[in-house]
Amino acid sequence: MKFLDLAKVYIRSGSGGGGSVSFRREKFIEFGGPDGGDGGNGGDVWAEAVEGLNTLIDFRYQQHFFAQNGQHGMGRNRTGSGGDDIVLRLPVGTEILDEDEETVLADLTEAGERVLLAKGGNGGFGNAHFKTSTNQAPRRANPGQEGVERTIWLRLKLIADAGLLGLPNAGKSTFLAATSNARPKIADYPFTTLHPNLGVVGVDGAEFVVADIPGLIEGASEGRGLGDLFLGHIERCAVLLHLVDGTSGTLLEDYETILEEISNYGAGLEDKPRIVVLNKIDALDEEERKFLKEELEETAGCEVMLMSGVSGEGLTEVLRALKSRIREDRLRRRDEDGEEEEQAEWRP
Picture 1 (spheres, helix red, strand yellow):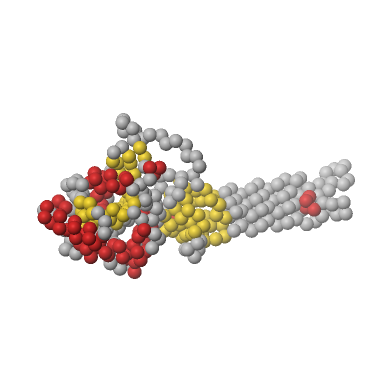
Picture 2 (picture 1 turned 120 degrees about the vertical axis):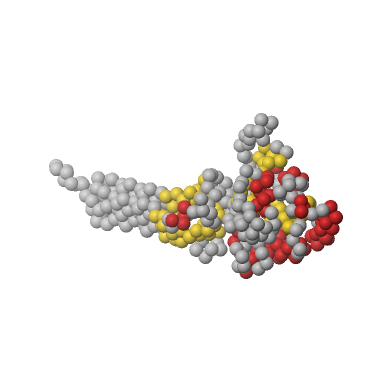
């Protein structure tokens, strides 16, 4: 399935049906009076977050969504039927933006959330509504209200507990493949990962979701490489895992490049808890490991962990460090039989 995280959609709610001008005409009934019915209401346009989706690819091939119009009223005080609503089923984590791509209309972060995007027009009154003691035969009825037409943008931000940061070929996809059932593409050339990948990682009986995004390079905030478009997928993460390639000859510059790019991106990424890991230590001897670790710790100003996604060395320690930074209510627990425990019903 092709990954798509941004889509432009045109929506229109249904127009209300017009009221009817009608009079009762029956044999032997001299004064029938007005009996025009009201028009039906137009259909609404809703957005709903559903499980089982992780892309907006459905909106690549259909961009126009129009709700049904209400029917006109009829004689004998018959009200026109209302138009059917239309529901846009979106992945959890979708932001709905106005046409200016800045104003957030809604943020669907939980399955089952619904939001009204465009309300249908009301049906018009029939002439039976305008009957009075001084106007017993009104010949007027209201037209239905027009529907609402608007353009919106859908932007998907994946729901993950931990996000991976690093230059291309820093070992992010290897880490995800080694710790989860995800199978991202892995190769010895840059930009192997072209779209975000999600994997469920488990350690010490707890599970959490890790997001792997395409690597950043210097100038990504200005559009170089794949740009910083995918950084939105780690905005919701509780912790970031910054992987630094230990075999790179410019290790410290690589670290500073990532910091600069997430700072230029903004959205609070630079303030999120971050774990710095020196990766690919299977290619380093003990002396090199110690020297590079000390150099990176001096630059980063925090503890640096050692890991190898290929050999598995240090993986468990890194996973435990990630788990400790994630709130307990975001973790999923498993019992001794390996079955996921049922979560208690949420209460405010």
